[in-house]
Length: 224
Image (tube, rainbow, N blue to C red; front, side, top):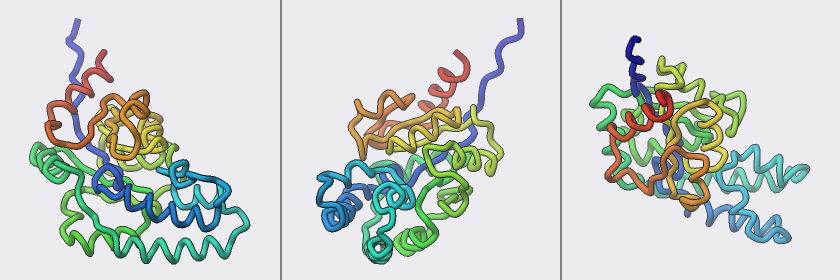
């Protein structure tokens, strides 16, 4: 019998907030203020909406509140322009090490182009970390739909079995799973035990995690 062909680790697909950058605590502050202002009757709403796109938040909690939505959009744009974009520990080095080994990389974020301009102002060479950058403008459907990750894989010329997704939010993790890819969860936004059922592996940061671990996860998922 012919030996089963080894699946190659070809592409690493990264969400942005809570995965590349340690920004989730800053968003908690912003959304805490907005939710207390417009929905004081729902304590802790800022925690319930973590990982949702702005469209999903508006559809779920601000239907018919056009003035509030305009105010939130304006404040959010101003807030993101002032935010600090600090890399999750080991992330930059991890991405560079993958690229040195020939692994393709893509940013797959629900953030829009305006947010990405803020990122590029902080890190002018940020785009050099990725072979492709996909934002909300590139997707027909938001996470947890697999649309964004399937499009990213196609952009990089990789099969779903050759990809590893890095995510932190529940919707993002479900998106990676729905795409049929290996999913590594970052416990930066939600506790490790909460996201573990949706992950092939949970990490707190990228220190002590590398190319060989990704290969091993692919082998377990697609060759068992």
